[in-house]
Length: 349
Image 1 (tube, rainbow, N blue to C red):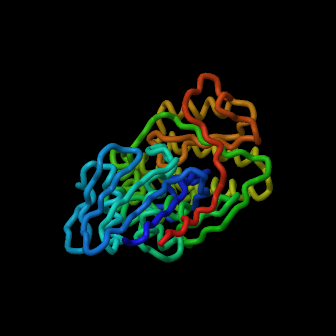
Image 2 (image 1 turned 135 degrees about the vertical axis):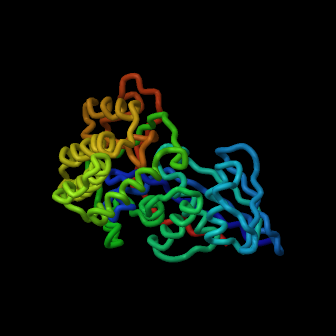
Image 3 (image 1 turned 90 degrees about the vertical axis):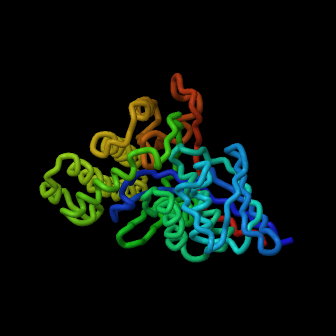
């Protein structure tokens, strides 16, 4: 029997810089110590079916594999199996077999469970290359499911660095480690509102940014003075978020390097206001959670993390300032996350 293959990949939390990756902008995420694990037992012989189970969902899905099998991942049922079907079409495994999925990363919480899954699947199915190459493979799988994401999530899942955030420049295709300041806690709080980018107006935001970029060029490279050329007020707000968000990413990276936690926290909170008002991807419950966090002693700043429309909030705190009982009335999960290596554990063969 062929050797069992295993891989484990981390999720990510984006400290600042959302909806900038597909706009040639900047972001500052980090890989975290919650993740997704897969085990693939390749079949002997020429078996052409992949049998998939997930600890998070009931049932078993049988996926056909091979270049001659026409499978549209966006039509696969149940929906949780679509990303797996997409990766099978992007990086076809050499045989069928049994695939088992487990992990500690909550689904639909804005911590990149999808990217963590795709990075681990790419690993066990034999994809090789730099983190940028792996991110491109994973992004293609998302696109085949009808979700026009950028490269940030799989990039940091594949290439994070312990105790560092990654300052990513998507125009220059660079990722520079930025040390996390001493005395800082990164805390993730679940808003309790789940979302799927397939069902949220994520694609609409992408199209709005593309429409604004047709006027001023890539939004991540635009300047505040370019905003006046965007006459549609809705598109101008989208453009303003991206332009100002890239400036906030630079400022936060500088604040981390100098150890100025107060400045970094203020920029994170300002980022949330921009995401809520200019980009309109927050929700009342997420806004309320951010307000409660920033009014808690020892919390320096907070913002939604990820694409929005629900999910989690990330807070920058003084060490030890926030624990599960530290927010009055909070009953949602809370995680003190550690910046971990993004490199996926090598598969066993």
